[in-house]
Image 1 (cartoon, rainbow, N blue to C red):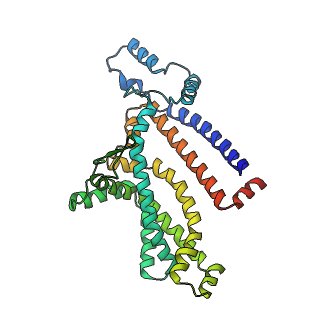
Image 2 (cartoon, helix red, strand yellow):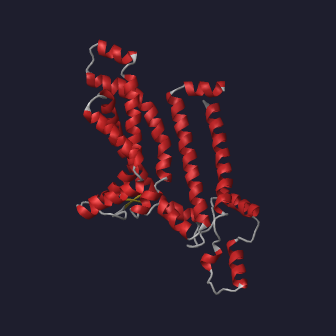
Image 3 (cartoon, rainbow, N blue to C red):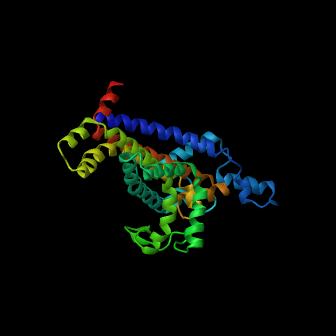
Amino acid sequence: MSVYIVRRLLQSCIVVVAMSLIVFLGVNVIGDPVHMFVSPEADQAEIERVIRDLGLDRPIHEQYGFFVLGALEGDLGRSFVFGEPALKLILQRMPATLELAFMALLMAIVIGIPLGLYAGLKPESWSSKTIMAGSILGFSLPTFWVGIMLIMVFAVMLGWLPSTGRGDTVAVFGIEVSFLTWDGLRHLFMPALNLALLKISLVIRLTRAGTREAVHQDYIKFARAKGLNPKRIVFVHLLRNILIPVVTILGLEFGSLIAFSVVTETVFAWPGMGKLLIESIQQLDRPVIVAYLMMIVFLFVVINLLVDILYSVLDPRVRLQDQAS
């Protein structure tokens, strides 16, 4: 087990280093931020001064070297626009994004698993076919369009929910959260649902496929032959086994909820990391863009590592296959 964890840790470190190089080089070929900060009437001396102040006069490999040294010290650069550490700006917005992602994940579990279970147990019913048709729509409809439709229906036409913003927040251990206030929950519901639609569809299809496979297994037939209560068979024997791959996939998909919340945060003006990224791209604020992408890479790596370790605990065959290879 310890060898398996060490191997995964080394692989994760290699991924982070490789992605840091790709992200830094990729972002530094986008546009010229100097012209965002100088007047069109500025002379060449003023332009050169701004270039030196931003550190853009150094060769790209030196800029990357300073970036790596700073990252090891917890410094991912200073924002060109705000004049503050980029990592500080990201961490200030992270609670809002994590709150949105956790709520979307919860919706995917609470809605997707029961619907997928029902569709798998009664595949020929009209309601099951309707559920599966709806899951296809969840995969197909663009997130930004669904967000606009939600705002139009629930905020404009019905007036039930607020359309933008985060609402009232309360501090928990120094972190502002909105899900503990009624106004915050009202603001959170629509963006979380918009972000969760794709994951709900994914969970429905995974749960249905697992259920259709499990109902024909010998342990289910044996449980029925013993005369066990059908609800016990479903919720104890069947559900316990089909949840392992579903939970694994959801763990991996949680990273994508954080990374792909950009569109949802933009549509609903949710003050998270994604909205900050869009603003930084518009203003060519390279340090913030790099810090955001590196934070996403780090979160992906950590989540995948935790899921790998958890899955190896649940299924020892994973460790055996890894050692054999």
